[in-house]
Length: 271
Ligand code: ADP
Image (tube, rainbow, N blue to C red; front, side, top):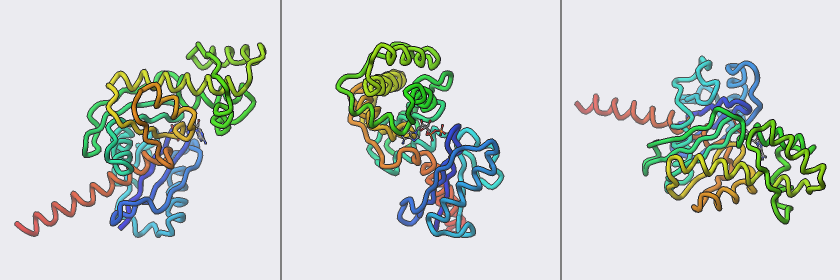
């Protein structure tokens, strides 16, 4: 049996196909979020099903999450990203006790219990500082792409000090640093450190319980991951595809719902 999870984020939409027999991901897709969440969701789901070589008719349940989750007519249920991040992280590594999700426009720290359910969380959704959007603006100032910041940062001998957290002021600051002769690699490393330090402060709001798992698109940047590991002083789990963890969690919630339904069925049959 298969379930699907769809995560309509502020910048990227993700879908995952889960084989509930083996509890493994058998297909996935990531596309940019368009202006119409329902159309984007249908498209990303179709791509994930095709990646899994699966037919839409064989999907037992679909759970939607993310920014655009309420507008998906075909979902069997909608669930918060907090729950999905916790369920997805638990499937990947059941030892995880704290999940850090750095997405396009917000970041979250979530404490999870030993069964993979959220206990507490802290959220930064008021300003772009420390998010993927912040990195995209800064990459533009460095005349590069966000996907290249990691390589640049890892080349640096020492990070430049970035003191401003607000996106607008930080952009002017790095333009000034570059004009003064700072190397782009040092600036990139400084940006990665600034995002990690801001994220670590968010994690401290709920208390650091190791091990910590880093998820979300920004988790693809290993320079940020290693700075975050140092800043929270805890072993950091970095999944192979951090951007898919929340969608994976949505598919896990869909599987949870099916097994609850069949448990209720067997209780009725037994009674
Ligand atoms: P959302 O769910 O809010 O749309 P995601 O978790 O999908 O956000 O993350 C999107 C962010 O991931 C983008 O803003 C971008 O900065 C970042 N990102 C995407 N690809 C990469 C990459 N290869 N390396 C580093 N960051 C990346």
